[in-house]
Length: 284
Image (cartoon, rainbow, N blue to C red; front, side, top):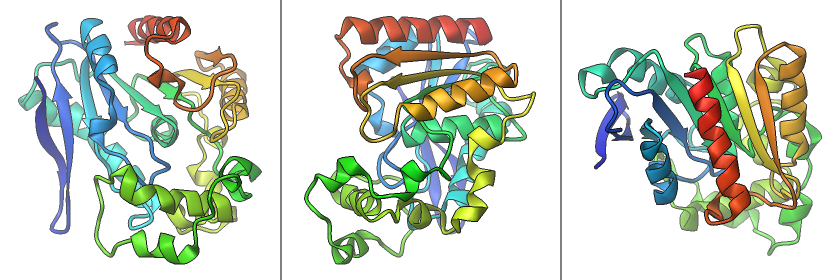
């Protein structure tokens, strides 16, 4: 069903993606970016139900790996997402049947953040869908200890440091990487760890502060009870996009937490995904 390809390769690493073909000729393609705080996750994180749903709606899927932090820092990670879009625009058509002029980027959490960042690239997607993503990594929410993670068992710095390798990581199991993220959110060290930048230098990496007239149409979905990424992050992004006259929608999932979309059989989630397809059909 899927074909695994290498979309980026150097002497030090190679990065893979899974292409899931639609039965529809020259169909649009969805670039799926997994979440994981930029610290863990892989292309395999796309749920089977969502794969079947997108394929059934007539879309190809390109689920990508990318280099993970803190071994690789944010500016380099961003180049991986840029490369994935470039590959689809210029190289992937030699391997698969799809329309390279109709590309959407979809991601959740950190993947939603990277999806929103794609709106600032030179080569942009046609549209963006962000599930509980964030547009502002300069804000206090990301630079103060997280109340949600402070309630959890405290992760010692020594443990978090032990889990960081000296290798390039492009596929990180949550079981081996989650404590790195937990420590970062408990200690307020997360953003500095993944970016290697001072807080004052982060504005260039905040979609919220880099919206131009060419920013793609954007759909935002967020639960009001999200304890990991504040619901306000999508509200602020929606307001800024609207102010810039960018076509945008915010789907608010009342009384829902982070990764609400994993509750696939919930009618509210089903309705939200129906609206995602409607949005994609309008803008692709």
